[in-house]
Amino acid sequence: MNKLILTIILTFVTCLTVVGQNYIYRGDNQYEATTSWAFELNGRYWTGNPEFTVAKHSNGGYLMISIAVPFKSHYIGGTVNLFLSDGSTIKCTDKRIRDHVDNRSIALYNFTKSEIELLEQNKITRIRFSIMGGMEGAQTFTADNKKRTLSYFGSGKEKNYYDTDVEISELFN
Picture 1 (tube, rainbow, N blue to C red):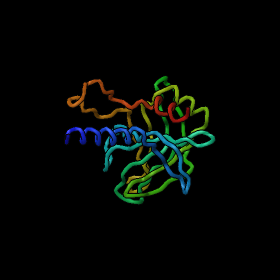
Picture 2 (cartoon, rainbow, N blue to C red):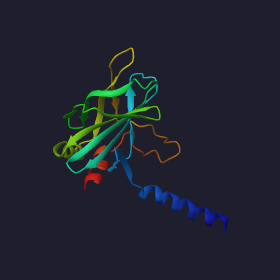
Picture 3 (cartoon, rainbow, N blue to C red):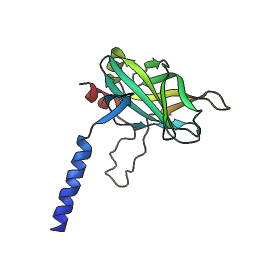
Picture 4 (spheres, one colour):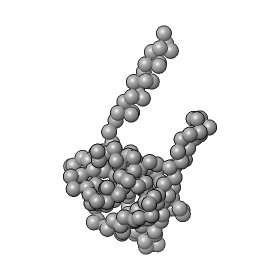
């Protein structure tokens, strides 16, 4: 009987996790979003890997970048370049939409509808971004679409990258 109750509770919790919707916020506005992707940083920064999220708005979408920073004077800024699986790139200009919350620098970049169409068809393979401020000035990094897998617990068939194109397509359709 205890095993049955435990199984029902675990199934219910798992279903809630799968059905849950992700959101990002800009001011008081809430936007539907993909899950956050923790791309692997190519280089060393004080605090670890950045997280990327794509959100949907009426004229296209947003790219949200978040990374822990050691000081409030450090922030994500400058042009961001996304490299796609077909060899094309998307360049996002800095509109100075940023915040600093819970020791994390957060920045939003805008996507046009045509850029969203490219993202729906092609996986993001790498993102180039800069962290500004501090004594060092601007530090530019790339982060690859790689994720750590624990294949020793699973079947070993888990992908070592994020299906960004699939998630973006599901969000916008």
